[in-house]
Length: 338
Image (cartoon, rainbow, N blue to C red; front, side, top):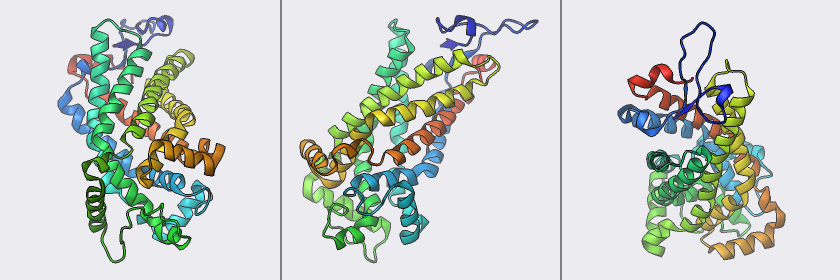
């Protein structure tokens, strides 16, 4: 566990020293063994689903920007939002949402792995929070992606179907590589068609198309996000007055971590999306991207990704840290730093 004190920040442990008050330690990092799991899991799933509901449109916009050829359909994030809202209605911004919502399940596996690995490392004498964050984030991403990639593949095909009619007018089938007929069909029927077509073409392997690309993207992203989060949190805690709510410091650290990670890993995310949707190999995808986009790979969809990542990081950490504080065992409740 980690305690808050400006005078002992280097050690990660200290006490509150308000004049005239009883000396009281404040816990700033709630460890796995301090949680009541019966409260933590349900609250965590509700928090994750709520955040996903609000931020899904940004994920959809980012995916469409990454799939399109240069600026063939959308000039940028705000233009994409305007066009999708105008041509497909606001429901178009939630195309594929219910398939994507299964990521809440992977979120449970992700959190359990992250916290479990941190606890294991701590039990083996590794106390450096940044090392625990780096290893925990990496392992959690591997487990989470193993669970969610099949749903991610189906969801991304649903996301880009909205641009298929306009793309097909120019002979571009990258928006609908499975040639799915959407006329007069419900979203459930379309989802079933996509699932059936993927299985018929590639078998079970088709649902893990882009799995390696996803790992190459999300493992470094997750590892760097949690590492930067710890770094920024420590810097913020040392810089602000002791009266500053620790949750506010954590939220600011999350936003900065999301921004930093997006800048560093955007090309990896672009490659992953193209591999999963356009059904090419990783080397072919990299070659085509370089031939058609050149250095635009570093900024393609970046605004949407940074916006999504920063807001998502803020919302997730606010929910995650609040849920952890609400789920601590009774003996720790009075010591938690809010």
